[in-house]
Length: 151
Image 1 (cartoon, rainbow, N blue to C red):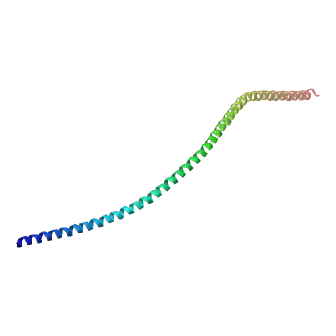
Image 2: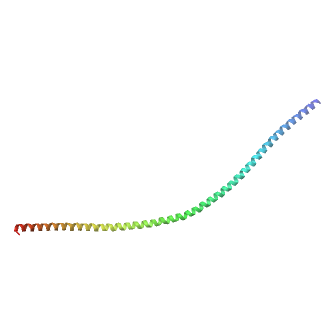
Image 3: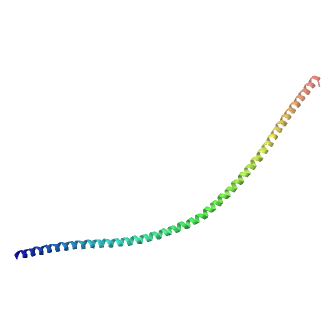
């Protein structure tokens, strides 16, 4: 009978040891679960903060997009005005080119007329010079004749 008591005592001690290890394991699991719970709570708070910041960022992004859209529309008017200025400048440039071509044609025509006038002027000057020369020769001849004739 003693053997039964000893066996029962060994079984009781084994169950007690098993219960002690189970209690320790459960306490460790409880501690771990509490830390996980705290971590999840902090994570939730951080996610709330990130969500709020994300919403603010989206709102600011929308405001910036609206501002960019408004400014782009303003620039469209400016570019249209610049295009009109470019067209006007092109028209003025074309007018100047036509005027320059016309002046060039007239100057060529007039340069031919001026060249002819210069040639006629040179011919007239040459004729005048020759006439002056003949006149002097005639005067010199008359003066010589009057000295020779005694006159």
